[in-house]
Amino acid sequence: MTKKRSILVIMHKDLVPPASTDGLTAEQISPFKTEYDVITALRRLGHDVHPLGISSNLGALRQAILEGEPHIVFNLLEEFDGEAVMDYSVVGYLELLRVPYTGCCPRGMLLARDKALSKQILAYHRIPVPDFAVFRRYRAVRRPRRLGFPLFVKSLNEEASLGIAQASIVEDDDKLKERVSFIHDRVGTDAIAEQYIAGRELYVGILGNQQLKVLPIWELLFTKMPDDVPHIATAKVKWDLKYQKRRGILTAQAKDLVNGTTERIRNMCKRI
Image (cartoon, rainbow, N blue to C red; front, top):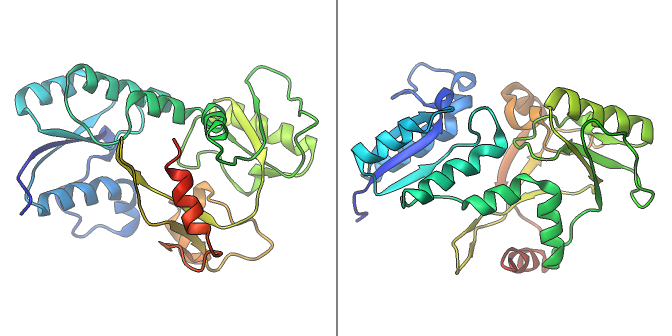
């Protein structure tokens, strides 16, 4: 039997789910589905769960910890004060308070937010990564000669496919400049352009600290996507339910991988 724990679940204030989803459509539930599922699952396991929405004030978090004395904080927060790169500071605050929490430590979160730096670290540990270049805001866009087309242009530090569309894959310097400018102006961040490598969209979860547990390889499937359209995880693929239905976007455990691929992926996941 699972031992009952007091769990404080933190998330963005706009994503705090209702107590029940009865009568709501899939489109209405979609924005907070993860938060609702986590809270519901923890309660079904018998835990005492307290959701807390956070935006730009750590006072509410401190008060909830002092008053509720949770055994652990379940962290679902993905930004702070409107800045994606600031989510690590909330975890740092939990560390200062000596409160256990789920997920990555502040250092890991900060490194992961910089796609260029994270790729350099992966390369050091002999994990293959695409060649890339970073294009800073307010600077001219000049492609290094070593970097050939096609290129995949995205935000350097945003997540959730923000700013990613079919137009993110570019074939020449004019389109590169156009897409980098889009990231600079519309997303508001530096841009990174990396070699586009066509293939399957695989995801691997890892749990643990000193001893790592590699979860089963998961795949994003494009069952109704035309063959001549790049099968990439655009913002519409991830968040537009009508588009997902029309294009047959599904997720499932990866099957029929080339012999040895699963073991190679598992070994790479344990190198860092």
